[in-house]
Image (tube, rainbow, N blue to C red; front, side):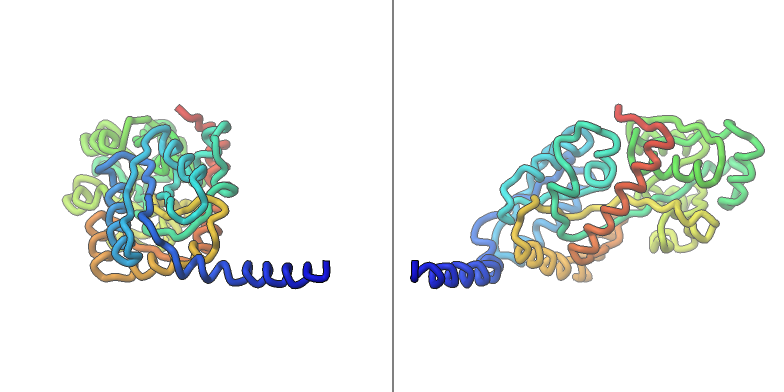
Length: 323
């Protein structure tokens, strides 16, 4: 019994030293990066860029694994249930992390409880577009036209519950307009019908429509972002147009399973901050139509906690249901 305090002191000392040792030794074997979307998609391209750079900095391979299905929920569930040892990372996007819990009541994971944010990598804000035949060259003019012609305008929805859908409904609510939402199976067919004049209004990622806007085939009225997009610098923000709450973007981040040691989270954040600061990486992101973000793990976590109730409110008020 007399030796017990000595034993406890040694144990406590070992615990205090454990965190730095974990961070110093990590990683000692290959890492896996789960991407909850198919190969070739925008998120997949971002993930492979980051995986290659991270592997070079950590001195270990980072293997990309595409786990596809259920709007990203299958892959995200796999992340949440992985061993919390720092060797399984996941790519987070708005759908399964900030929106899914409100759309899918029986989601098998809790994004806040089961995932630890590491860093928000990049974003592509959503832009409000109209066909050139619409007699509106500003958000104010569009709202005035929609109020004078309730139900006459149609908005193309890339996918039910998508960020484009949610921002559309948020705009309709805050502007107080009756615009009919027309669902499509993807952003490409939605954009094509607006280009063809069959539908008049579209909210979609800036990155996918810059050429059409520059060619005059679509008219950009406002970017749903806190600041103007470098890809469309002449287009005002929704805040400038009088609707400061209408903000939404497609973004990518990195998460790890809950219980991952904090020193590992901190090391991953530090390495990825350095990756995002590289001018070559910024250029590569720009070619994908995305702006690098980079932030602390705590900042990313705070961002997600704000996004979840915001979109839950939109889903409830608009009566959006999962397909």
